[in-house]
Amino acid sequence: GLFHHFVGDESVRMYGIEAGGRSLTAGEHAARFQGGRIGVLQGSKTFVLQNADGQILRTHSVSAGLDYSAVGPELAYYFETGRVHFDMVGDDEALEAFDTLSRLEGIIPALESSHAIAYGIRLAKEMGRGKILIINLSGRGDKDVLEVARLRGGVLS
Image (tube, rainbow, N blue to C red; front, top):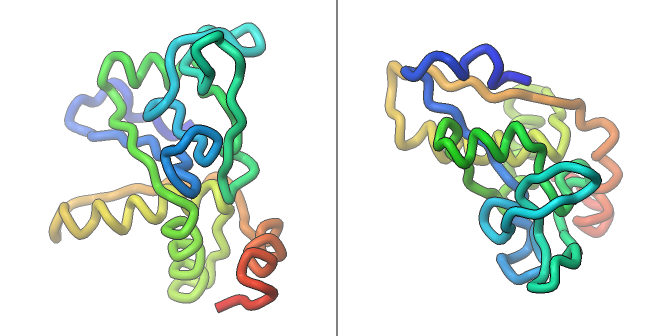
């Protein structure tokens, strides 16, 4: 992914954005670094959303691609070493970012990428002018348009 090109350049601050879902209540999000702990899922030792007995917890995200109980081992390594700063964006903020990019740029982002866009908008306000911010658009959102409309009662803004 995009991190590969910048991981060796310490002057570049990298961010990974998780699905904050509806809340930080168990089962209402998919933020593995916010509520997970080390475990093994599908053969990988990584951060997993699990109960005290190690049973996998349910997750939620408006984005089907982020709605998973574990995170890849490479991202877990970046988290543990502090190379990548991880934060989260909730469903509502991701949907707002979906609308913003669609309306202002004519690019319909995937709901997965909409989480990163939302955080990028937040971060850009803190960064100020003259700084460079790259947001990876990992997928196209035409597949998500019907889901966004369903979530809004059949209305797209």
